[in-house]
Length: 524
Ligand code: ADP
Ligand code: ZN
Image (cartoon, rainbow, N blue to C red; front, side):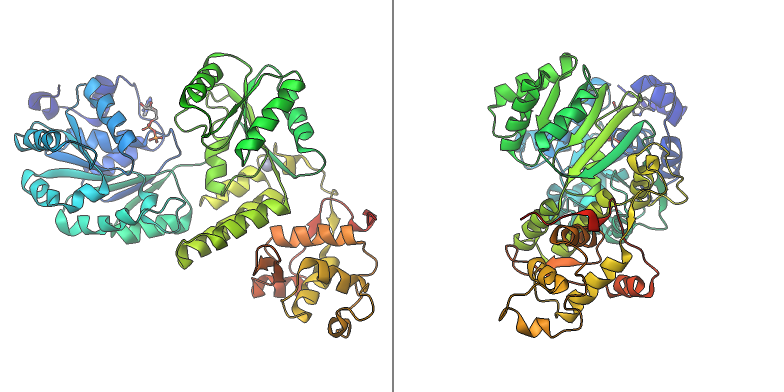
């Protein structure tokens, strides 16, 4: 255990070596710790696995008084406390799941000054505990998973709102917020909601230089495409993410039929079956886990060589977390995602029909659009993700599918995009894709949509087939020039961003397709 005489001459680095047994700080750890040691409010944004816990644990141990750690997940809290105790650090936790006598014992230890760190859930802070702690002397306050305070984050927790009171409850005590979610809105929200004082903000690079990224629209039989992607990694371990339990089962079966070792994993399986499959994935080589997102949290396998999204992830944050499970050992790994307009529609209608607050829904819809714009986009993929997470001056990776594409590849469909968007506007932003295509191609039957047939955009798109127009509309939806609104089953097309539409009409914004849409024949 740590004694006071040892602490007197101890530095963050000597403590890192003595207590944790590590030789050096990683990345931004030393800078973050120096700021907290100097008593400054700090926000540290480090990727998952980047070593966020040490950023507050070391100051908590070194500074006089109890270090308070606010954490949202009781299970994670218990793990951290156990790990610290094993290292000889005097850590305890207080949360709603504990017996009253255990809570009492933890507080007694703090009162006697025999505690370095106390982990609490946000709601535990409400109940008179703050007063007790203030009397004991708090050395530093850490807010773990700080993005939970932001509605813009992907995991908003109303409990976290109460943390804005920490500043009044513990005046002058330095606070450090840590998170792996880095987009700028979330960062600003954290600083604002927690009311950090002249905060020092540290944002690590979110680059994963060993990951090669790719994505393509779903076409043909998905299981075959997945099998060919997996076969390119024969004998290697990987994860195939799918949106539904059924899909994980059918994908695993079809990979097995193709002679690969695959297992399904989802929350509907018996816990013993799940544990056994996870164990096999960790121990054996060359197993492909076909899983829902239930798989992955806390699975630390360094040599996962690929992550394939057979269905797209929920957001770019989720994407980066999921693909980040590949290549933990730093050796080359691949991430490939399949996506389609139906996925985007489904994701949007889930949000629209959920009973989240309007503000939360708006955020989620924006995130969905950003995700599909990224998947369907033509710029460097790694660059796009890093910019999304707030990095500036990012050079193209040179390796992703978009960087590898020949410059002349693709088809300039700006003219068709202009036609489609003007037709949407002319028709009053109140009809769906099917009727718009009839309108554009001038193929309305007698007596059908006669009022729309009078408009100037009627028939202006005759030289493109129905399939060609479908490709144009997909692109416009993915890129955010159009949006589907209204009834999820019968969506209507609208123009969500006037600014972007104006740029399109002025010729300041281009729309590119992978292939020439006029080559697509209407299947009859
Ligand atoms: P995060 O919370 O950012 O996901 P953790 O704090 O759990 O990451 O750290 C991830 C792993 O890296 C842990 O096993 C931790 O002990 C280890 N680690 C953290 N800092 C260092 C370091 N400076 N040197 C070596 N290992 C470290
Ligand atoms: Zn690239």
